[in-house]
Structures are given as C-alpha cells and as structure tokens.
Length: 122
Image (tube, rainbow, N blue to C red; front, side, top):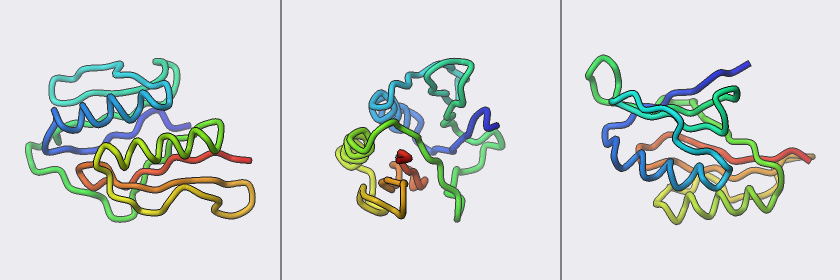
C-alpha cells in the first residue's frame, strides 16, 4: 500500500551518511538521487524512504505524531538496528523490547528529529 515516505532535512550530507549506514543494517541501499535528496530501498518494487531538502525552499521541520517504522524479521535485527541508530547519534525514544503480544520494537529519532521505529512481529 505505501510506495514511499519522505522526510525533510536541513543537512543533506549528514542525513545521507546517517541513512546509508543505518539502512544498510536492514539490507537497504541508496537507490535514487534527486539532487536535493535521496531514496533508499531494497528494490524498486518495494516501499522506499526518501530524505531531502524541502521543495519549497523553507526549513525542514519534524511532524508531530509522524513516525516511520522499518520492519525486520527478528528480535535480534531489531536490537542490532536500534543499537546502530544510537551509535549514529540518534536520540532514544524507547529501548528495544516487547510492546504487547507479538510486537517487538525500538524507537529513536534521526539526526533531524524525525521519529523512527524498527520492529518485528512474533
């Protein structure tokens, strides 16, 4: 259902380095270059994440209540990606762990303040 999600940044080189490293942990790589931003994914046929400078030229800001979640296949992968995010300078928004029956997740904010989550089911 979701084709892609785009997040704004005010520091594209910093954001690109962050997402190159973080998303490599889940098998994603930089797939598209828009000049003012990039998109990462596992393939062109799967949902992607775009990070770019806003088209209107105004400063990027964080959406209150907005969160992007990355699905992985195991608790170990959740733990690994969550730890990598913190190593890269992410702010902790909730340690990796169980969040109810069958849902395991870790929450963090990227370097621009966007809320992200890595999770697995089961």
